[in-house]
Image 1 (cartoon, helix red, strand yellow):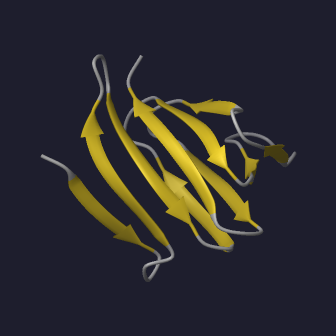
Image 2 (image 1 turned 90 degrees about the vertical axis):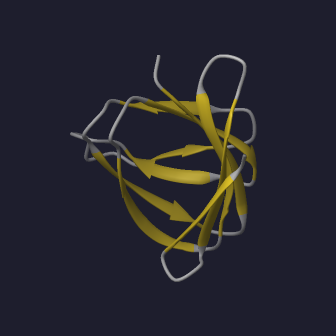
Length: 94
């Protein structure tokens, strides 16, 4: 069954599901600035829109557009800036 989650006063919404190999979420982020924490390894793929991300232990911000992805190790925090509604796919684990 699907698991629906909502964060940041409804500005980030996701639906959790199981792929053939890994658990995943697909979701939408409204314009804003966010900080997320991980509990396990994550691969984030932008589906539509763009995410400007400050990865853990980095002072640099990097923008990811459609079909681009980035990874974050478990137990890390990362910051995200969103200019317009953006759709993402996140898989958990390696």
